[in-house]
Image (cartoon, rainbow, N blue to C red; front, side, top):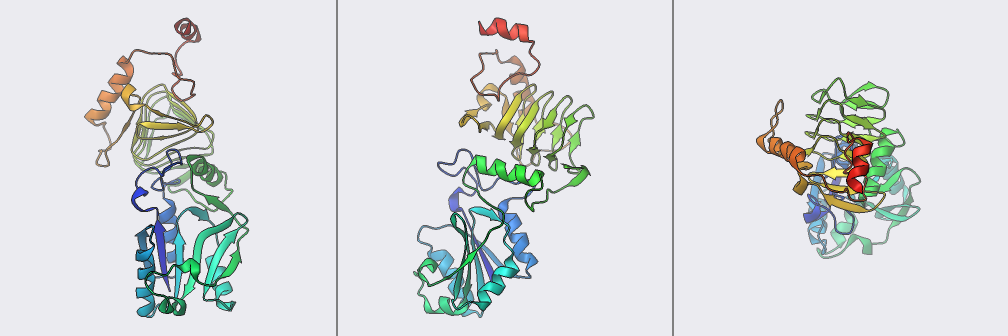
Length: 326
């Protein structure tokens, strides 16, 4: 048996058009959806696994399956990434084996979810430009947990469901107390307030006075500077956030933040409030770039905040704020 996983193609490392900031490369509590699918497929004992980019003509994916069929692979599991679904794969295989068709497709109540099981025979009969959806197929109805990952809001739903144990995703790292996962390589200042449920990934630095609450997550190699608060917010990998900010119902990736309730995306980089940390960043001290960003955050003249609850300075006295907003 072989498994072919089809990613989002050239958009895999960047945002998907018309989906806000959402990117398939975003990890979910330590691992991407692709990584989690690969682990599940390997758990079936499948040794032949390949990942290809999505192609409008589908010729590359079909050719890969045809080549496998010619080499004697009897069944091929095709997963077109676009959803996280907790399908019982052994049950799907049993259902397919008992059916009368050479192709089985998985559906939920909203329609197909991009998972098919194909027999070798149907691929040998197909030419290289044939598309698997033209083949007669059986329908496998799945009633379990599914999230279609097509937007930043869907991503946050999956993160929250995982933290609240509504689905089977297990965060990486150590569970130091109920519903709080902190990787062994993360550094959390003793004064930081960490409330369940939450996730703090490997190589992260949580500075003094930071508060992380309300199903928030901080992915690998990120840094949350002094006094910043996260509520129902996800910080993506390799992201630096300046001191004294307040994020709620948001996702921050590098310099950009998307506020989900308002559907607004803001670039914080020009104001020195966020930065992308290089993947080569060393742990134990901050890079010169991050020091510059932090200094800029302190020196930048304060202007009236946009009507988005992501740029609010937590430690500003209310009286001063009223004076400034007159």
